[in-house]
Every structure is written in structure tokens, then in C-alpha cells.
Length: 98
Image (cartoon, rainbow, N blue to C red; front, side):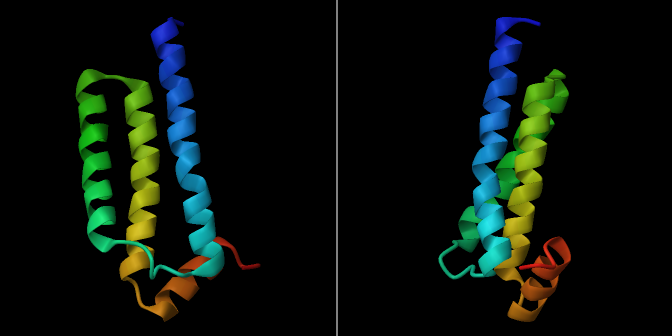
């Protein structure tokens, strides 16, 4: 494994890890008031493009990181645009104890 690949995997872990607290807080509080819808739309598009770029290059760290962050961004965006009742149902499905 090359040094560049190791750096890619470490960066991937940190990038994915950076999203987890936001997703978890959203599941627990169900509060999306402070989140910007246009920002999360842009995030989803950005991660889709980066994932596509990674696929075209055949670069696993780029693909894995951006696909995982993209899924979390989609989750955040769905929670942002969903009604309160739908947010509650989604959060309950992900974490029934919440």
C-alpha cells in the first residue's frame, strides 16, 4: 500500500467521521431549523459529482468517502425538507430509543 493510499484512507475516515455527529444530533433532536436547505442541496450535488469523479478515476478512497458523505447529506436534506411528523418517523426508525 502506497503512502498516498494510506493518506487517502485516513482522510476518508476523518471526512466520514465529521458527518456522524451532525447526523446523530439530527436523529436525537429532530431539529432542522438552523440548517440551510440550499447548502445541503449543494452538498448532495457535490458528493454525487465527487463520487462520479472517483469512479471515473477508479480511486476507491474518493469513491467510498464521497458516497458515504453523500448518503449522510441526503439523509440530512431529507430530514430538513420533511414535515415534523415524517422527521419523527424517520428518526424513530433509525433510533427507536430517541
